[in-house]
Figure 1: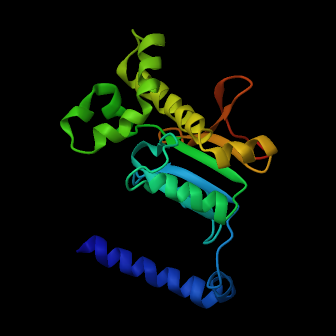
Figure 2: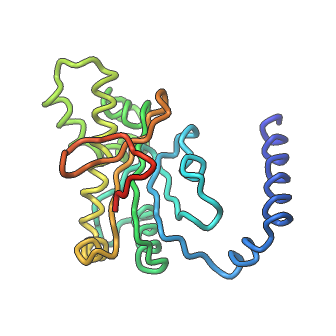
Figure 3: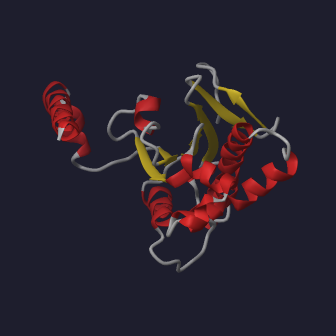
Length: 214
């Protein structure tokens, strides 16, 4: 119960700040939301997109799942949580940026690399979305140590999600028109660093504060 008590105390601090000191913000948000950015992030408890980006309430629309994966477009899919969120963010909220935020030490990617998904009821099928990332790493880095292969697959998995985003026609159209921009980000837990994918160099590079990645 200690965690629950801590969470309640945290809410009281949140309440004091946003419904006391900054009441105007939630007065505005009570009438609707208009975030310009969608973040697809991992459900990992160590990687909170709002905390990492310093976002305020209303700044980002967030979708979290195991290994920050985006499934390919499949009309009529059953209980399509991620596609439903993408549809709402793009067509209703009209976001201008979609960030796929991966991270180091991802349990979902580790399970994929180790073939542990077959021992689970739901996780195995889900992480198979990134199967081509695993195959690529095993083909290109067959003799590397497991930790390095995991890291490579974590980053390759981000690229799979970016590629899958473009299979949604209403995202591809907006990317082509320049009204939506796609970004691949990787959070290094150990180093406390944020990397972004540079398509020109086909590499993840450290983000600099003054950098314009649009």
